[in-house]
Length: 104
Image 1 (spheres, rainbow, N blue to C red):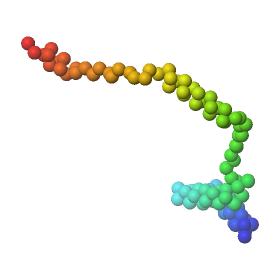
Image 2: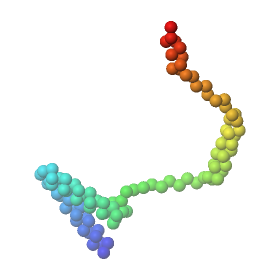
Image 3: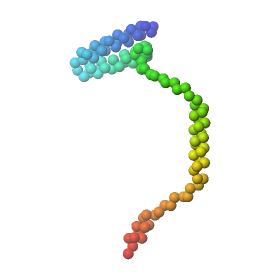
Image 4: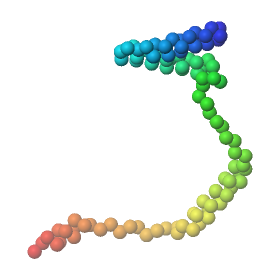
């Protein structure tokens, strides 16, 4: 079953590539392009080792527990260095100052 699907998709890919080369107007070009994309999509699923998207996976061997511990220590040290309470910001009424300045 899969062999037949693969053969059909390969034939469709070749046919759409030929149609793409001999397209004379915008409609036939668009049709050939869409047929080509469909055949490529099907082949990506059927023969993913050949036509599929290539992905690389990099494995990093490290002790994540140790990194997490050090990260927590830095956060705790940072929290102890911050003062417990900061004074509230002073908000000035700029418009009130302008009204006072505009009065004779």
